[in-house]
Length: 198
Image (cartoon, rainbow, N blue to C red):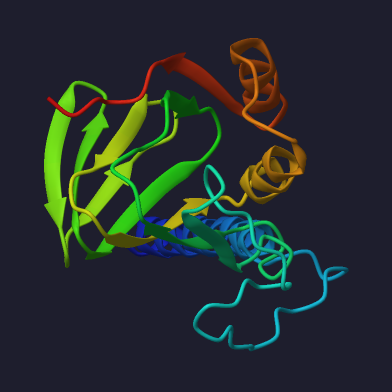
């Protein structure tokens, strides 16, 4: 009789614990879904296509005045989650050594050849290669070929698109002080000069 009572009591206790665990898991899963689901107040993204040679909103932001640097998917399209750019290089140049404090950056090489510096690592990247520069790690690149093309993206979108718009409003190359100020205002810091070809 005592054994039977023990089994009944144990079964009830186990069932109660299991129900509590399931309820807790359901609450945790619901919280996770709520965090992962975009704010219902935001409009859902809509499909679109940007033609070759076009910028997303028709505003071109060339790098140093002659290298194509167009936004293809804007942060406005993705509720700030992602921005995608196309760079077509006509010069053997690249950006200053810099860091994005809150964005990961990914580069996919379409044409040409580049050297990338990410942290202490250096990569030679050619067509078909992909380079990942995590947020908080200094990086830069330089084009080695006469012509180059890459698609690069930042996640989240941050303020990179606005940074390029502001840079292209300038009447000439910015001073070092102004460049550093503009980088800081858009979530980046310049840490050193661009790479140079030997």
